[in-house]
Amino acid sequence: MKKYFLLIMFTFSFLISCSSDETTTYYLIRHAEKDRTDKLDRNPNLSFEGEKRAQKWAEYFKDIDLDAVYSTDFNRTIQTATPTAKGQKLEIQRYNPSEMYDSIFQKTTIGKTVLVVGHSNTTPMFANKILGENKFENMDDHDNASLYIVTISGNKISSKIEKVD
Image (cartoon, rainbow, N blue to C red; front, side, top):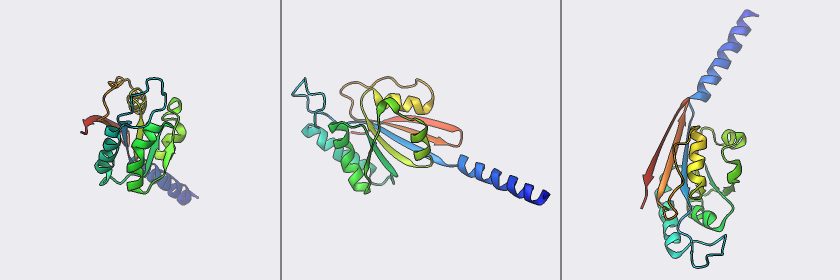
């Protein structure tokens, strides 16, 4: 009986140590430039410049092996995510920004490399939620080039922002 107890304890300890070594990386971006011609349009498409930026994002991520691509349910975010998702042969998964980084999302993405496309307020808020602190403020309304990278490795969480033009 003592042998089984030790075996069970060893197995349990091994599984815990393996799971804590997993690295999860979140790439968070704001949608590309939107068409601003109709000020009343709450769900605009990307502008020509935005379409070019969406392609630039796909080029940026082409050598990064993504496991998932998430987007809010707006034209501009979906259109920003589409070239990258297609290039990685992934389906875009929708998320509700009011439920960002909930327990289901955390369990689904643990140990994975994930792109999340959001908005000028939801992108930094999402990063803050992962970090567990209010490190980042809302983005400038014309900032479509910032890339937030949040990495979780065991109990260590790191973050940085890069400009991708």
